[in-house]
Structures are given as C-alpha cells and as structure tokens.
Length: 289
Image (cartoon, rainbow, N blue to C red; front, side, top):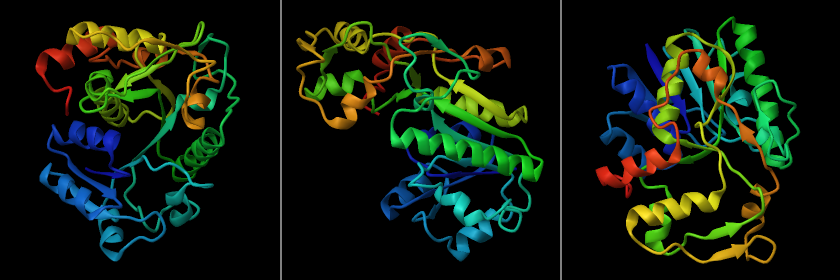
C-alpha cells in the first residue's frame, strides 16, 4: 500500500499522519522546498509539484501508488486531472482508491436549513463551482478505472495552530454578528481519520466531513475566550464591519451540514463538537501547533 497526497498542506499532512500511524508508506507533494523538508522530517516522502509538470522522480513514485488523495484546489480546472489524461492508467497503474478533498461550499446557500449529500448544489462562488466540476471529473475517473472515488466535502477546518485561541492570542479574533448565521466546522485530525476510514473500507461516493454542531461563529470566539480566561472581542455588526470580499462572501452562505451518512458508514468522530474540541486543544497545550 502506498498513499500519495497531492497538496500535502494542513489537511494533507493530517491525512498522511493518519495513514502513517499504521505503518503505511505515505508520500505527498508541495510547491516549496522548505515544506518538503518539513514533510520529510515528519516521516512523509516529499516531492515537488508546481501544478503544471510531473517530474521524472514524481512519476516514478506514482507508478506504485495504490491510494491517491487530491487536495489541490482547482485553478479553472483540476491541475492533476489535466496531467493524468482520460483515466490515469499510464501514470497510476496500481490505483485502488481515490479521495478528493472538496468543500461544503458546493451546496451554496440553504437559508440555514439542514443539507445532506443529496441536497441540490447551488454554489455561489466561482471557487465552489470549480470544486463541483472537479468532483464530477474525479467520480468519472474512478468509474472509468473501476475503483472507488470518495468525495470528502469539508467544512471550516481548524486544529493545532489554526483556531480561535491563536486568533485571540494574536489580537485578530473578531466577533461578527449576523442574525441567524451559522457555520460548519471540522477538526483537522478528523479529516485525516475519515480519509483513512473511507479508504480502508473501499468506500466511494460523496461524504460530508463536518462535526455535529453547526453554530454561530461568534459563539466559538466566546467559548475560546472563556477557556483562555480573557475577554472576547467586542461585537461587530456584519452589515457595518470592515471585511475582505473573500471573508464577506462566506457569510452569503448559510446552512447546517449533516454528517449522518459518514456516521452511518461506521465512522466515529474524535472531535464531534467544537466545545469539547476547544477544551481538548486548550488542556493539552497543542493549540499553538
């Protein structure tokens, strides 16, 4: 078994660690020589990939990859699919399973209602539309190869080094209030564990990877501040708050994403809600990463 993660960043590294715990050979790609060094020090084989060309060294490693995880965001189109061709058989002759990291952003706005994997996708942003197109292409490639292709629709990712504690500590946390707005979130270690779970059970199809408790974003800041013993930042009305266009766009989508399908398959979240997850991060001191 050889797992290769294209785009071995924050989530990709968590996935590599999840597989590495069982002694599986794991490798990953990055654009940066510095990041490649970090991956190697973590026990992950590292290859440079600029999203445009596959080096001879990378192609040689791909020849015995059995489990492929694609985490690189599309830029108009999926960069890896463009290089693999119709079914990737020449570059990935031993392929047994595909995992594609997508986003719950493909659902668009559902006015705060619950959505499952069967919900209509009405993506708002261009980046989410590109993700949806990439999902369909990876599912098609899996079908062409006769191997399971799992689409993992991820919600807002946090964990060691990326969380409300860090933002409070830096003074960058903001308590934006928009009536009835909720967001979904997922602890990065559960991304790693769910990817490994789906691959071990040879499961394909679409799965929402999100915790049990969608909720208002300001509540997360307040809870983290309580655990730290500091005052939360003042409330700011969404309508008048200064925000980047990217940040404001996230508030244009309001939904509660269900994880029932993944749990019905047998997966158990280590961090099923943000209060217990934040408490664990604070208590073990790993919140800084």
